[in-house]
Length: 244
Image (cartoon, rainbow, N blue to C red):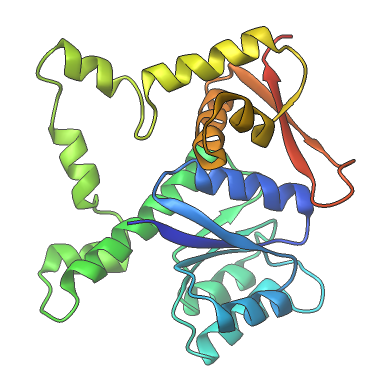
């Protein structure tokens, strides 16, 4: 199951980075980006979103007020705060309003992924217990978000049984060796900055697939990325082989 995630952030570069961080996890898809709380509430009133990544300092309506409105309007979504606000008052108010997690900028991508896993564990436990009773372990997961989801638990307990399985386990979910090599070879032959949609077109792959592999290669420091603001519209990400 894929979870829809909405990024609410007024800084375009930070918003794009947060969106990329989120979609590095194959269990999450982007529902979009909103620049302020007012736009976010309007979007949420018309669209089902599983998780909101919410900044605090924004124009028109700040993140804490937006979170309060989400709860008052009974919008069924979970919220992770991602903000520069590190004061006790803001933290306490958002905790009382039921945030899943609270990340202070700047933060490491690994910490962001921990927050996503915490949300996924809660969502999975709630979904499995819907319509019935819950045992203490499931309740602990929902309340604390610390227990591993069934998928994570299975992954950690199933060690590779042979060399073929070991080779497969060397790549994260959604990464295939042949496709990875195809994209690596493309950047070997094309040293200039490349847009993801152009790479997808040249290789005959979907843009969603290519973005997943590009994010993986950036994470592995095989590619470097920058943002192109001279597009005449929404900024786009550019990629090239690291060190070139």
